[in-house]
Amino acid sequence: MDVTSFHTDPETQFATVLKIKDRIFPSKPYPNWTAVGVNWLAGFDFEIKVVARIPG
Image (cartoon, rainbow, N blue to C red):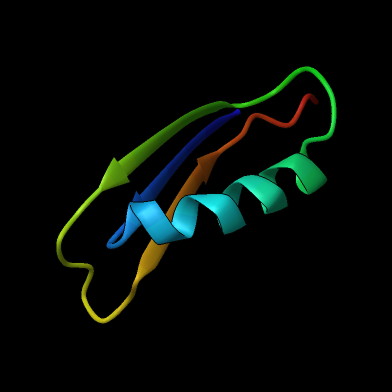
Protein backbone atom coordinates (compact mmCIF):
# COMPACT_ATOMS: atom_id res chain seq x y z
CA MET A 1 0.00 0.00 0.00
CA ASP A 2 1.24 3.45 -0.90
CA VAL A 3 -0.20 6.61 0.66
CA THR A 4 0.58 10.18 -0.37
CA SER A 5 -0.90 13.09 1.54
CA PHE A 6 -0.75 16.74 0.56
CA HIS A 7 -0.98 19.41 3.28
CA THR A 8 -1.48 23.16 3.01
CA ASP A 9 -0.50 23.56 6.68
CA PRO A 10 1.60 20.52 7.66
CA GLU A 11 2.64 21.94 11.01
CA THR A 12 -0.93 21.96 12.32
CA GLN A 13 -2.32 19.04 10.29
CA PHE A 14 0.27 16.32 11.08
CA ALA A 15 -0.88 15.69 14.65
CA THR A 16 -4.43 14.91 13.49
CA VAL A 17 -3.30 12.88 10.47
CA LEU A 18 -0.90 10.79 12.57
CA LYS A 19 -3.63 10.02 15.14
CA ILE A 20 -5.92 8.79 12.39
CA LYS A 21 -3.09 6.87 10.70
CA ASP A 22 -2.31 5.08 13.97
CA ARG A 23 -5.97 4.15 14.39
CA ILE A 24 -6.36 2.85 10.81
CA PHE A 25 -2.96 1.10 10.69
CA PRO A 26 -2.33 -0.04 14.29
CA SER A 27 0.24 -2.73 13.44
CA LYS A 28 2.63 -3.94 10.77
CA PRO A 29 2.73 -4.00 7.84
CA TYR A 30 2.52 -0.22 7.73
CA PRO A 31 1.94 1.50 4.38
CA ASN A 32 4.62 3.46 2.63
CA TRP A 33 3.61 7.07 3.40
CA THR A 34 4.80 10.26 1.74
CA ALA A 35 3.63 13.62 3.11
CA VAL A 36 4.04 16.71 0.94
CA GLY A 37 3.63 20.32 2.03
CA VAL A 38 1.96 22.46 -0.64
CA ASN A 39 0.75 26.03 -0.78
CA TRP A 40 -2.46 25.44 -2.76
CA LEU A 41 -4.98 22.61 -3.31
CA ALA A 42 -7.93 23.63 -5.52
CA GLY A 43 -10.15 24.65 -2.61
CA PHE A 44 -8.99 22.01 -0.12
CA ASP A 45 -6.65 22.06 2.90
CA PHE A 46 -5.74 18.38 2.72
CA GLU A 47 -5.67 15.73 0.01
CA ILE A 48 -4.85 12.04 0.24
CA LYS A 49 -4.09 9.47 -2.47
CA VAL A 50 -3.97 5.75 -1.72
CA VAL A 51 -2.84 2.96 -4.01
CA ALA A 52 -3.47 -0.58 -2.79
CA ARG A 53 -3.30 -4.05 -4.23
CA ILE A 54 -6.00 -6.41 -3.09
CA PRO A 55 -4.83 -10.03 -3.29
CA GLY A 56 -6.93 -12.13 -5.63
